[in-house]
Amino acid sequence: RTSIERYADAAGLLVVMPDGGRGFYCDQPYGRYEAHLLETVRYIDRTFRTRDAPAARGIGGLSMGGYGAMKLGLKYPELFGSVASHSGALDVVGSQHDELLRQIFPDGVRPDDDCFALARRPGRKPALRFDCGVDDWLLPHNRAFRDHLVALGIPHAYAEFPGAHTWDYWDSHVQEALAFHLAQMASRP
Image 1 (cartoon, one colour):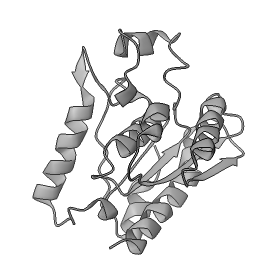
Image 2: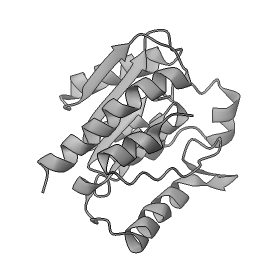
Image 3: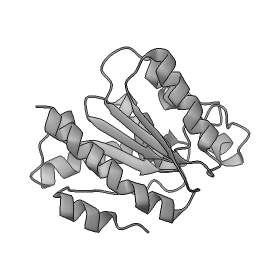
C-alpha cells in the first residue's frame, strides 16, 4: 500500500517483499518465517544478478516487519549491510502480554529473537536507521531501543516525525529508507 515499487525503480534497486504472515518473522510452532526469509535471500542471489555481499544488501520493514528487519539485520550482519525500520514493534519482551506474541513465543522470547539482546552481542553491526510517528502507539518501543543503542554506543540514525501507524506515514518515509540503503551500499566495498 505504498509506492515502494515506483521509488525502488527510480533508484535502481531490486526490492523483494516476502510475506511473514502474522509470525513476526520468527521460526515458531506454526511457521518457519525466519528460515523462509533467509532462503529467499539465497534464492534471490542465485536467480538475479546481485552482489552476494552484506554491503550490497539491506533489509527493511514496517511495524511487525520493522521488528523483523531489525532482528534479522542484527542477527545476521554477514547478510545485511543496512537495516531500516518504520514504526517497528521492537520491544517484544516488554509486550509479552500480547496474545499473538504469547503464541509466537510460548516459552518466552529467546535472546536470538530480542532486538535488545542482539544489539548487545559483540561484533560487527549493520548500519541502522529507524523512525516512528509521534502519534504511533509503538513510539515507546522505538524510543526505548534508541536509548538502548545510545547506552551501548552503537551508531544509528533515529527520527520521529508527525504521523501515526498508517500507510500514509510509511509511504512518506520509505523513500528515506531507500536513500539510506543506497548511501550505505555506496560507502562500502
